[in-house]
Each structure stands twice: as structure tokens, then as C-alpha cells.
Image: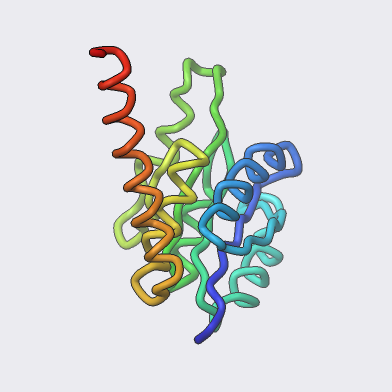
Length: 158
């Protein structure tokens, strides 16, 4: 079985802390990740080279870019692999820069997940389609979430 992996492509080094949060959450599902830096605006050929490097592998791409997020659409349009956009939070423009991730041209469909924890879960669910170990970890994660809710309810209601 080919090893499953998440490739996190950041628009700049400023996105490293956000990307590390995603990597940390991926580890909980036993999923390796690699962080790369390439800009769709400034270094599109480098970005394309990174995509091509992983095209024959069992990967999900995660893009981390704010402001004008061309990275997510660029990556998605150049690969047959799933792409999850997980842009970092921004207070600038009242957070409206997220619209550059939401509105994509026809034929370009990166998924948008705004929380690092949930981006990792989305990757795990995608990879679980062909990896039973990851599937079991997703099931256990969901059971733990359900148990916590039940426990919390019992705790406050005696």
C-alpha cells in the first residue's frame, strides 16, 4: 500500500505557524506531512514543480495562503488530487479576504476548511477511503468526540 501523506503548500513563511498546527493535527491520525513554500503570484513555476513532484503519490494538498488566495485555485487546477484550502485568520478587511478562497472559477474546486483541526480531519477522511488504519483512527476520533459530549452533558446535569 502506498503511504498516504498531506502536502501543505504555504504562500509564504508567515504561514508556518498555521501550517504547523495542521501538521500537528495530522499526526494524531498517523498522517505524515510536508511543508513547502511557493507563491502562485510570485513563483508559479516553483509551485507547479512542487505539485508535479507529488502527483504520482497518495497525497492530499492543503494550501495555506491569505489575502488574495490564488494558491488554492492554482494548485487545484493543476492536480487531480484533492485540495483543501485552510487560509489563516485575518482581521484585515474584516476577514473579507476569505472571499478570494470561496469564489473560484468554473472547473476549479478546492475545498475550504477554516480550522487547522478540521482540515486535518478532512484529509484523514479522504485518505481513509483507501487506508483502513486511518479509517479506524477517524472512527475512534469521532467516538471520542461523541463520548465527550455525553460526559459533559452528564456532568452538568448530575
